[in-house]
Image (cartoon, rainbow, N blue to C red; front, side, top):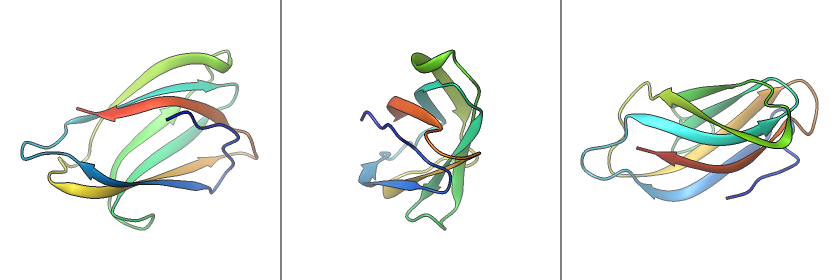
Length: 102
């Protein structure tokens, strides 16, 4: 998943993510950014429980990708929609190259 032109307050939902029986412990995300911001990972919908929060720090540019890893607040199991909510100042906050839960 390659996502660009991310603005404050926008969301992106990935339907039917299977976390399996054991669940996931952490979220990893490859981000390129010139600005700071936050990516909240919500389960089931944009107002659902926050499973994890990535604090995005400037990486040197929108294509200078760095892997950011956070421990999940809870250990989701089974199938859920995953909604990423983006928070920061203004528009074109950062670029996401890929994400995964492990």
